[in-house]
Length: 567
Ligand code: ISL
Ligand code: CA
Image 1 (spheres, rainbow, N blue to C red):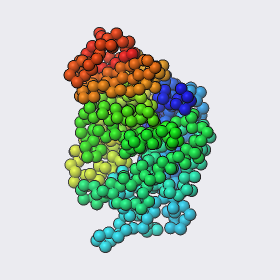
Image 2 (cartoon, rainbow, N blue to C red):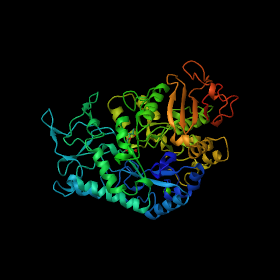
Image 3 (spheres, rainbow, N blue to C red):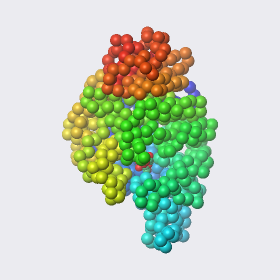
Image 4 (cartoon, rainbow, N blue to C red):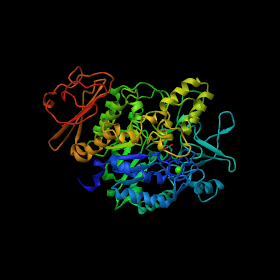
């Protein structure tokens, strides 16, 4: 294995710092808290930590609105704390990757403060400013009909200068104008500064939105009477995106790329796009986060939940496996700080199935070809949060959507149900460390309520129990380090038409692994209808990993939510 491919045998752990560990009793997680938990992460065995943003920020979108890229928000600590975190992580052989949010800044970033100060300010062109446009009724309105991801129009009128600025996310997140070379240079300089400080790469927030069609055409009208349109075709994977990423690579990563990890967050990306982004020869990024599999349980939009069909999941993930088999590389994830909890969504959080299904999900994901990401608490089988009322949601996306949907006449109870299923807040409740008050997350009042199930689901209990979800994740991570076929093997999906069985092989250097998993509450025969037809060769295979105790036969029926890895 060349050094350039080290991440094929690596597992990344995502930390949402605000909810990970508070060290000073103010109820908000911080850098010293992370430092205090490094040994826990070392025990789990992960290779890389990715931190969600910790920079100076008014926290309108929990830090994804950055006011200073080169300083730390006092909520989280200081630059000295980051230096110590880097050193302490490296001392344990763990790399540290930072979140890079450069599609937009905070409206409180000095660049934007200058930019909005007058139409002829030198930084005016660093953002997307446009004059109002005449409307059909003779008035004026926003320059395009684009809807923001956080509800309402993507344009905000600045009264002082009479022009609108673009914000694809909240109005406190104005979009940077990447057409301007000064913007790009400023971003690259900042990135080099972080690498020189010792960080090991970047997770690049919505990086495939930085190139827009500069004529800014309207998008397809969205059904309803909002008058808004879907502008995504004009800014997702835009005209200059590959040029910008290649330029960034040359300006920032050249000469040190092989030691780093770069992952682009790319909503709406296709397999063909992903090949272009991740082909090593093109020098863009190592891998991307795609969103297809986390949209399969959505109807018309994310707040329109529908039941997931396992066949759709297999078809989708299988297509990504095939599409990036020769060129490029996959990232693998079930959840993150923007998604509901994996076990509640893809497994079962019913008390009798939670542990088995959480382990099954870890097994299935980590045995795919690609680099797996574990989101904090996933390794404990943490579940969605039982939100009592609409007032219990804090996330700007959820809060704005609730307000807009109810205002436009939707039934409040159904909107609340949709939030319970799909809200990002499900992932943002504090880490469950132990069974003491506030789960050991803070000695003060937590900024966001701890899930009441913490007395049962917590790290202290799981560390002490060799059969826990934690120890299963530890084993699955170890398997990637010890079994070359996990990192490097070819992937082949089996039993694609089976509605409950997820089965595939991995083959490498004469070794073959078979992974079988039962996504259901009842027993399932491996040789039943639509299942596996040539099991014979596997009857005396070695069971590398199981999740519900030893089976009587490695090819015997799978119990509810049972998963096996055979060699
Ligand atoms: O969360 C989403 C769906 O619920 C996505 O639309 C999400 O907003 C999108 O994936 C972009 O996410 C990233 O950028 C946002 C930030 O709010 C998210 O937390 C971040 O992961 C804006 O910076
Ligand atoms: Ca704190």
